[in-house]
Image (cartoon, rainbow, N blue to C red; front, side):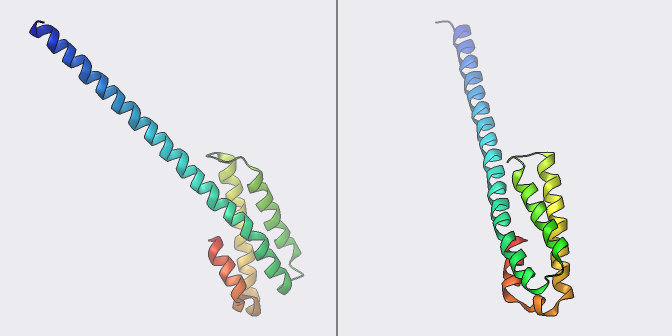
Length: 128
């Protein structure tokens, strides 16, 4: 074999190795992204599961604040119905849910007994 053929063969092998390494890096990046979105979905699901506990705790103290609690439940259901993964609709639903939760936490400020309730404090801490 001549040196020219060996050089060309070596260059082709190096290019092939580089392409394989690049492809593996892209696949690894895609898998990390999918895993990250999955982690986010798991945390949101956990948060959605805690909201009924929060609502029940607040209901015992503030029965006449039904509209606020209904807004939280509606926002939770809307956020849960949006498909998993990155989307604008998911972000909007989460924003509405966060706003509704803020109003529930504001209720706890209006009711000192509720604010002192350790159950509410524990649930609120896990939701944030």
